Image 1 (tube, rainbow, N blue to C red):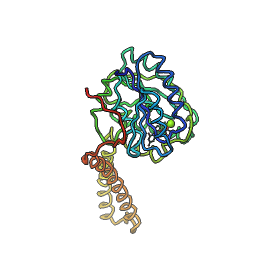
Image 2: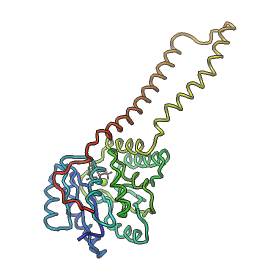
Image 3: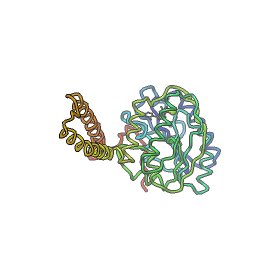
Image 4: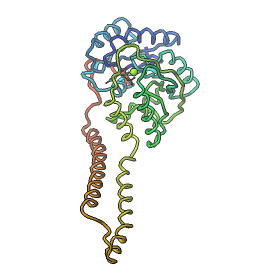
Length: 312
Ligand code: UDP
Ligand code: MG
């Protein structure tokens, strides 16, 4: 039977959280009184999570496992969940229980009011380092200012999406994926619900600074051309300054003044412009690399085991 609700949880080494996740999600979803499914996507875990997912699925047919051939990353794991989901409303939730499953009931209530995307806004965060809080906050603000879509601030991937939205998202096969941006980009009626982000139930973060930075660059390049335009701006400024100084230097020379001294001035100017040019080349390279990834047309993920995909 086709479920009304699909819950998607990406899992990368969350061995200890899994039973608790299952328990809390079941409790909330049973309370709603409609059929549901829980999609557990194993993103190349190495700590026994895979076996645990299989066990849970064997005990409860509402739990559907998708096992990846290797680690593809959080955003891709969620994408697979969206691809395999069958519900009329789909909820993305972190497996570490930082997103309280109890909030799903509230999200469903907003969905029934007619909202097609209900995103959870982190009003408070617990158990995270000052560095993580600061970088996250900076990240959301930069993205908000420079991208063309207004991606709500302080929201993660914890959200409920209507089937209509999920179908649109599933048709967007871009390789570099920033799901919260994509889900804002599609439009529809969207609303936020505030919540308190808890500390991890167990284990440690699977998002070290390196991965956070990668996600930030994906978000910026995926939703803005601003970095590409920086070169143009710097070019205009540099050319403008030169236009002012060329006549000054010529005149000062003609009237016999020694306006500039030695090689140091030249060297500084050359090094500065050389640096700026290399940075601009790097930005270009970032976009070109992404074009290359798209052109190769490789699949987004490879599954080792997965349920039959629903044919519409
Ligand atoms: N995750 C994943 N693949 C990865 C990294 C993380 O599937 O390569 C999952 C992880 O198991 C968790 C969710 O994505 O369910 C969020 O990760 P995490 O809690 O480590 O991020 P944080 O909350 O610290 O930002
Ligand atoms: Mg977490």
